[in-house]
Image (cartoon, rainbow, N blue to C red; front, side, top):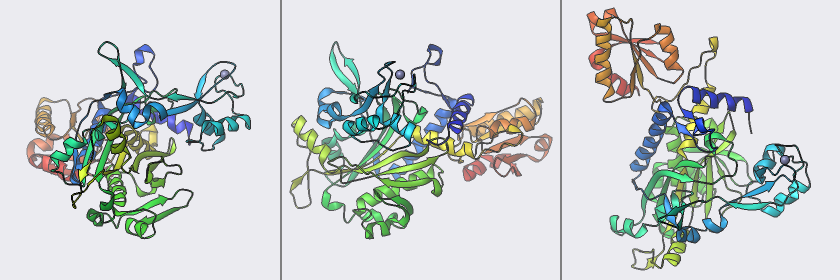
Length: 486
Ligand SMILES: [Zn+2]
């Protein structure tokens, strides 16, 4: 955990400015792990989701949408009902309950996520981990807490909110197969909410009980992974990678394949398009790295996480790329009794494999704000958010130099013209300097001022947030100008 101050400062800033409020509902005291996205936060989140849509669509994934609530049988088959849990400990003295692995890593700095309960218990025995509430040494048994959020459908049918979009995306496999005319590989993706009944989520948007996921699945036969042609489009990307138990190296995807760091072209392609997507969000190379899982699920062929180095929380997982093999379609074939198979080129039937890219738009949103807030300029205590222009919630603000009817009229006209294509704001109150500061503080890339010269020459002054340079632009060209610059 990196910097408590940086974390609190960021969280209060993004609440004050209208990005993320919470925990929600605030006026009832709030429930941890639930948040409201304010006007700017929702615009930013839409920009993130639309970028995901655009990029996945470019790579020929088709968007789908499935229900959030699914029957018990689905989660029995997927293994979530029996195995999807967090390790808990309780304080003998005050009875507070904590996530065992988090408590250890917070107090000792040791990374113990994924270790089994026996090992965690040994850790508590051999160390002085204390109860954060009352200070008593923790020495209780570690028990499992299932993370599935249960609900009732109809009168008393037990069903569950999905803990990820992924499982729901696998189930209509036979319908996809018909749509794609029985031809593999094909890709689909889904953006939607998921739920995890965490015991005490304390990492703001990084760990919510309700959160948004964007997950893409590539369905293909095992033998199609090796000669996956589209790999050539991304093979020269250079990426920082850490193999399990290894050191960080910067390497092109092509080399990573040659050196067997990655197993096949299809998987390497998934790593490559994930990386390009995060570059689209505006993250710099120096804060991005892929890290291989040290402990993989028994069925997984390979698993790497994309991590971002946050000022508030340090290296944070923001996306996972997993080769899930044929595990999912096989378990759902067995449980449902429907054969989730497809015909190979030679006519034989087989169960396709799934390569999955799974990310959380809420985490990405928090990470973007974390990175841009870091670059704030603090002269006179004023903050400037250097949001990437494509991510900025408000693209431009329009200021009449003074509250005079002739200037307001022209400003209104510009507003009406631009609002059909861009989210823009009209701001008439306070000095121009104050209005610049207000827009800088929420990351608006351009401010447009209508002055008395505008009435004569038909031009306005456009001021760039980052360089603070001003440029005269013809009013009739404004729309094109903005389109080009954003
Ligand atoms: Zn206690």
